[in-house]
Image 1 (tube, helix red, strand yellow):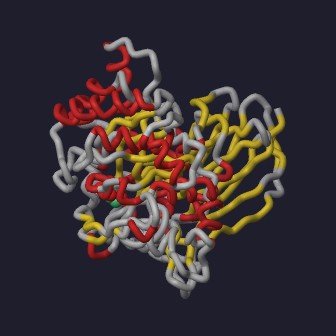
Image 2 (cartoon, helix red, strand yellow; image 1 turned 135 degrees about the vertical axis):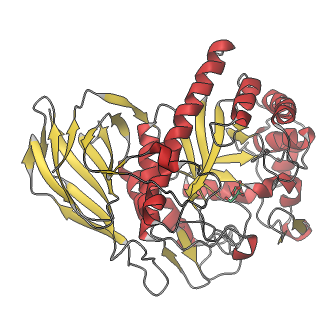
Image 3 (cartoon, helix red, strand yellow; image 1 turned 45 degrees about the vertical axis):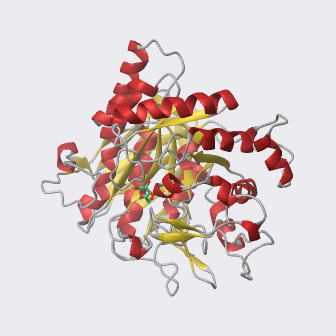
Length: 494
Ligand code: AHR
């Protein structure tokens, strides 16, 4: 019998709902044919796909990052504003494609307003200049009687957009990036970008471009940019055809987050920096099948991938003092939870844990005690480039658990991923100090086998099953099904 023990006074910290944020890049069918499809009967008067918006809204994403990704390092934002018929069509060398520029800054802001999310813009530090980044901030946030703020007004947007979040380039360390730099050169360049952007609008918050969170690049960048930034951005993609490697790989984030927190502590201490710096995991996901540009990154997600996603989110909750923002890469069609064609959409397997976390996992993270079977992964067969030496991190608990106390609804929410491929795990859930549970609701994400996917033909192979719990007291028993993610909402009395 597995055991979960919860002490409602033994807490980790506050879960920041911004860890449920998203990312949309000009890549494949994410923007065009995904969130934006002019002339489609499914779109509104702006060209926004209404069915997509409805599914996006249910994810309650606090922030949306845009326009890339690798795309941004060749993107000139000025090409994407003004009358549609005058916008120029450009080559996109990040993804070897063409960019019509029909969706630009004004469309992005309108989209964010419609889905009630905060915009986060990453600036071009590849082919872009300091002037362009300054102008972009002024175009979005300027209130003076000056050229770029007036251009926004001319385009029909009198009020400033007040874009708060700005990224200083994307993956500038990588040879795949237009304008790749070494860490020292990136720091020098980013400081100059940061200065003028902040001088233009001192209220904005900046993100330094990190790597894995534990690398030499991260150390050098944090040492150079700590005085200027509020967030250090890191990325991770994992995945494997081997079931256990796939579902355990998200524990890499725990290595990254503890290492990155140590780097941040060290820099803040040695430079006497008062303002906090947090980690923004501004790209993360399972991604290992559709990796080449010609696949348009249209990954089809299995149930096992959904279990990996739930494990990722659990690890962000466990490290809620370190990671305050996380952006799932990406939103629609491209390594995404929502998949469209011209007639409609279906929800990929990974959509379901994302939806449940976004809705219910909030408040105070508890330091749950978990005693269960362990799993060792001697020969990790991960194929994703960011994932190294996974076996070092094990043995792993078969049940990956977080508990949060939602003070507003007075309920404890348990998020439990049973990674055991074959067996159910009967578990006792015990509350300390005579606190009691009174009934509750269980939501289970599961399917016939770990390799199953959803599709246009079979939309509900993996979905959410909900049932009421007729139980109560200081200790309750629950059986977690094989290869499942279960979210328990447990009203508590203290
Ligand atoms: O999300 C797909 C790509 O992955 C992004 O463009 C890039 O930042 C990362 O390498």
